[in-house]
Amino acid sequence: MEAIGRVKMGSAKRKLLRRGALLLGILLLLCAVVGILASKQNGRSAYEQITKGMTRQRILALLGPPSEKSDVSIPIMGSVPPPPGFDCDISDLQALFTARPSNWVSMDCTLVVFFDEDGKVVGKAYLPSSEEERWYVRLIRMVFPK
Image (cartoon, rainbow, N blue to C red):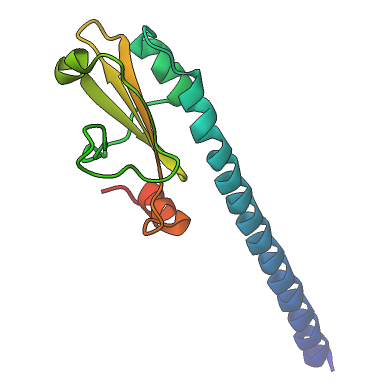
């Protein structure tokens, strides 16, 4: 009889552990969704806070370290039509040719900031994510960078 009582108690503990694990999984999924939605709002607002003449240190304080991705195409010369939502603030094209771009890739967009040789902003570009690069692809790339 004692063994039967232990089996039943073990079964109850397993059910409780399963429910706890399920609840934890749902909570983690909810946190991920909230994080994704929050990042969608931050990309555009961060872009709008960047102004010409800002120092690289101030940009790093605003956006954090730049992403490793460096193969970003910016449609500024008209050869490629810009995607919907694209924005670019580069008034001095001459400065652009000597500027050093840095990229920040988030869940909803890529921000490109151009710095002159003194480390000051001379231009910026906002590239929304393409339809081919869905949120889960970006999430996987952020969690497992190359």
